[in-house]
Each structure stands twice: as C-alpha cells, then as structure tokens.
Length: 437
Image (cartoon, rainbow, N blue to C red):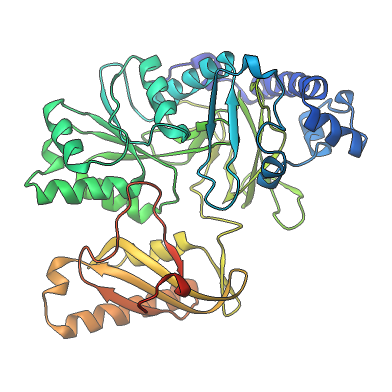
C-alpha cells in the first residue's frame, strides 16, 4: 500500500524541485531562529541566499554528534522552550546523550512519516502491531506507537523485555506485526520454542526491525525460523528517530523519505560529495523539522544510494543496508573490517547460531593485531562428535580468511552461552571487558 502517492511517487524532477524549495526555507529558518547555525554560518561567511540549487548544499557546514554534545542540552534548539512538547534522547553510553526536542508540529509530522513507513513495510489498518521497542527517552517506542495509531492499526504497547509475556500476548491477541530490534526477535523465537510455541504457526506475518546493524544472513535466519517477512528500518535520534528510511516487501533497499530528509553520500576522509551508486558515509539534512533542524548531519553510517524507481512504485532513493560505521571499523593487521561483515561470514555457514561475540585486543584506537570470534553452534552440532566441531571451526577460519582476508581464532561455544540483551545487541568486546579470559 502506498499511503501518500503524491509524495512517494513524485517524478525525480518534481521531487528535487520540492526539496530545493524546502531546503531554501529551512536554511533561511535556521539562519533566523537557531543561534548555533547563526554562529556556524557567520564563521564560514554563509548567507541563506547562497543556496540556489541542491548542489549548493555543499556550501553548508557539516553537523556532527560532537556538536550536539558540545552544545548539550538545548544549544541547537531553534524555538523557545515553551513551544517544545516532548523531549527524547539517545542512550548516551559513550558520553552526554543527544537531546531531541519536538514541537507539536514535529510530533504530527513524525507520526505521519511513521504511518507511511509502516505502510511501506506492508503494515495496514487491519493489523495488530506488538511494539517491543523501548518506551521512554528512546525514540523507538513512541515513534512506532504514534505511527501505528496514525495508520489505524491496533497497537499492543508491550515495550521491551518480559519475553514470556510477549509470547503469551502474541498468541492471545493475534499479533500480526512485531516491531523490535532484530536480535530481540531471535530471543523471542528462542523463548517461544522453550515454551513449546512455534511462532510460524501464529498469525505473525511481518517484523519491522532496526536500531542496530544486522546482515542479510541474519534476515534469512529470522525469516526461516519465524516464518515472517523481516523488514529493515533506519533512523537516528539526531534527525527524527525511526522513519528516515525503510524497506518495502521487495527488500531491495530502504526508501528514504526524501520530501523530509535530503540525503548525500560523502567520502568520509575528505568530505567530498559522491555520486549515486558509490559507497560512503551517509549525510542527512532535515527539511521539515521545526524545534531542532539539522544541516548536513554526518551519520558515520556506510551505505550507498540508488535513485532508480522501485518495483513497488515508489520513486524515492533507496539506501543499501548499512555495512558498518566509520567509528566501529576494526583494523586487523592492516585489514579494515566491520562487525557486520564478520556476521555475514558466520551466518553463511551451516551449523552456527546468530549469537556471537567479537573479542579484540586493541592497541591503538580501533586497531588490533588479534581477533577472536566466539559463536554459538546449533544443538545437533554441539551434541555430535568432536570431529564435527573441529571441522566446523576450521571451515569458519577458512571462510574468514577467504572472504575477509583476516586471520581469526574461532571459539565454538554451546547453545545459549552468549548473553542475550533485550536492547541493542553488543557485538564487539575488548578483551579487558572479559575478566575470565
């Protein structure tokens, strides 16, 4: 279902005309309303009239997560505090949290964007949506909740955790759509099997998963185990929360809501803008935010953009699955590798489960001369003869070397050894975090 044909099926020419109109307006808006961008523009000699084409966006300064932290909490705010009706924030696990204020107009816009996002994923007003994203300061819970209600779906606001109760409600209330992190969907399935419940026999048909990186191999694993369509969604606290982009059921890239967000791909080293199809760092500019508009936010996420219309009929550019972040790249004996690449190799080998840990000995930043991967094996492999375990370990080592050109020690562990988490899954651990090793 296409919820908003007028915007989702615009010709590229009409869409770019709308983007330019909104870009000019938002640049003029922050130049008048935002003390932060007033200073940033003045430092660089920028005036709103300098933006006369979409290409002129390169004249504007980048904004980074550091800018949010240096101006914590409300230094990027563009409206008086009495116009702010809600405040969200990031987890702040690596420093001060990112604060995300919203006006009522922002909330209404976000709700409509999320309704459109869910419709893109294949959700409709007849669905029963179980929202297992965390409620509270995290944008996921309320973002999905408001969007689903705007769409007209029935919402079960379970939030994260209490997994056995989640399974019970899924059965009793006839849940057809689950929204959560991809790693939590696997915990739900694992718990269901322990309870003697086969989710494939339930009414569940769609899962909308985000908030953490996951591979195509993990998607196949989820779809096979749960019998659902697993849809990838993308968003950031700094931009709006969930809803920046999402896949349609064709699963061939995430449609960016281009009438609200202007996307660029840049070379992360030079900042140079790259053409469609090339892989680099995603940069986003909000075109319709009121409380806290953001110019050229460097997401640090690595992806590419495809402007070709999709089979679903939508014309907005599609971003490829995030392959990694510029700040989570590991350097193993001179070879650059992302955790998501390691996951892809692991889950492509039969006999392993989608639960793993990457253990590194960091010597300088993210550089490491040593990599160890702990991965759970399936019950039948673990209970089989030692020779089969040794063969699987050797195969995984060979695949790592062949596909990623890195040497890694593989440690096969029994099922359910690696800790589960109800929030974002942590994959990379420094050896100093593992006192027993």
